[in-house]
Image (cartoon, rainbow, N blue to C red; front, side, top):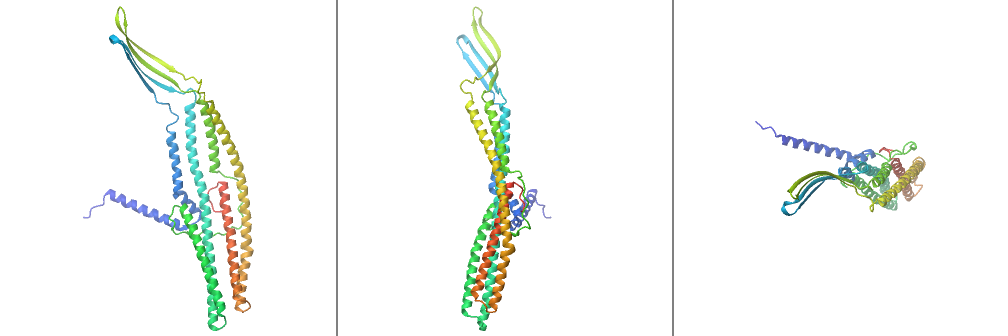
Length: 417
């Protein structure tokens, strides 16, 4: 009978299965990308963001050692003389704050933990914008290469037609030379655009924590919507929340600096035993128990300088918050104006210029077929079409990049504009 596998072996098999499934899932996600899935992968896998999340653990570790009493102090004293005269004292002292210092320290450490969490959110917010921009740049580079391939196919088809015409005696060798030269130039330009596509995909892969050569299939075409998105008011922005929390921390720090002007009071208990000579009775032992209190007087170290410094920091943080609020409003207004501008520009290319350039190519090809124009006029029409389609693509890319900036200025969740 075949023995059953051990529990550890089964555990290993299950772990390997989950690892394989996880890797397969990630490959699928990396292979077929939309802007939403790219953002999801980056937030989950980006290494710099994972490092930023460790800041929260550091802040939580610091919070554990603040807002508690200082350790008690053990005191011992031994003094001796002749004939076994002497004194022995043992006591313990605990220091207590006269003010609400410990409570304020705990509040400040809690704010530090929240600020560390908000710093992670700020890193996510910046990463989302970077991923959106990288995705649209990669999508535009892919589409630019596709446009160039279409131009190469047109040029190759025309060159083939001219070669057939040369064989039948209807076309000249000069036309064939011109056709082959233009097709070669377009092919070289296409290779250059392929390099730009590879570079853009590599930069996107870096944000997604993928190898630079991981294949990406971007299914989301840069198609303009039917109308410009509606204007929106600002949502919750992580950097604004962080600035507000930093101001609260500064206010708490001011209160803590004032509360720290009085140092802690020491309260202790002690037991003292003493042997002394009392003539004529001789050596007499005596035991004492008592309470002692020590109060530091703020004569020289008053703490007023530190309180003034913290107050200046609070004023600066308040001014920074106000400046950030004003900046956010302007960012939203400017970003939305650019969205509207680039939408109109891209729409003009889509509705008028591109269609006219394509019609010019069709008419040029027909005219060359009727021997009404020279072949260079056809390739000039090809070049114009390529330039127009590339300009239209740039206009669309500018629109989507403006949308990414606008959504980032709003602080909204990652959505397709």
